Amino acid sequence: MSKSMSYFIFLSLLAIVPLCIASKNYNGYLNPQYYDRSCPHVQHIVSSVVSKAVAKDPRMAASLLRLHFHDCFVKGCDASLLLDNSGSIVSEKGSNPNKNSARGFEVIDEIKAEIERACPHTVSCADILAIAARDSTVIAGGPNWEVPLGRKDSVGASLSGSNNEIPAPNNTFQTILTKFKRQGLDLVDLVALSGAHTIGNARCTTFRQRLYNQNGNGKPDFTLNQAYASMLRQQCPRSGGDQNLFFLDHTTPFKFDNLYYKNILAYDGLLNSDQVLLTKNRASMELVKLYAENTRIFFDHFAKSMVKMGNLFPLTGAQGQIRKNCRRVNSS
Image (cartoon, rainbow, N blue to C red):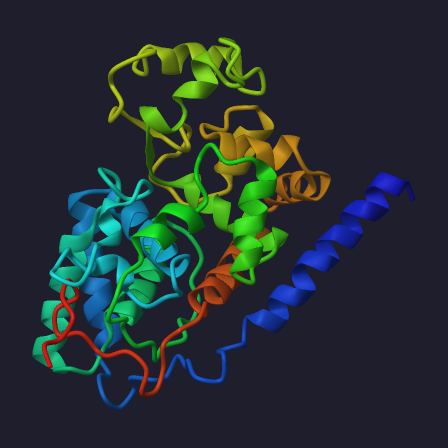
């Protein structure tokens, strides 16, 4: 057996074993059956509203999935992202990763309103985000998983945390991995969760430097397929058009599948943070190849990494509160 094949098999086993362990780690507090008695229809309510929203706007699946990610990376999965500006709160919605980008808040509002009618002051906004992210994935054709529940909502936000902790499209591979590790997530989580980019869009401003000035020397990023780059330049000029949208997966943009990884192998990764998974680290490169070859393994790893991410520093018990309105802290 060749050394490269041995390494590939070892990496596959290394990736699967810790994730299997993590899949049932609910931090001692979160539990999929948390609302079985207090609000037995919560999952149905969330699924119904999300289904209608995605049917109306296919982009919404990716948007709701992204909200959960951007929430969990800042102070944990506590719905801090949903808070609007107020006298005491500077909203995370105004941060660089979220401004003119994060969307789907009205869908969360609708879910919360329906749940409040069915089970007043029972289900947290943080749990709604976690369920909506799972349902969005399933509706788009991706994997299903049990969502551990029982989170409480924060009473504050962190604009600086949102600006500094969320991985950015132009970050180096090592910076992105460091940000994941600060959350207790590892390389497998990084590559698997990046697969969320199999659906959704990115703005011109998030990848423009790859087309024109990757290293500050006036030259494009040559790890980007130049035929693909030429097509992108038509709607992403050197200046202007910052908000023009492009599919993260130009092959099957609304279907949750493994084409994202196949695009990376063809050097058609749209964002720098996508393509560096192939070019800057051997272990991540092998995972990209594995997921491109095997949808089942990708789906399995993605689901388990979503559970792991959803367990980041939850507020439980007497911590936090259950907001009546996801945009505002409850008045005392």
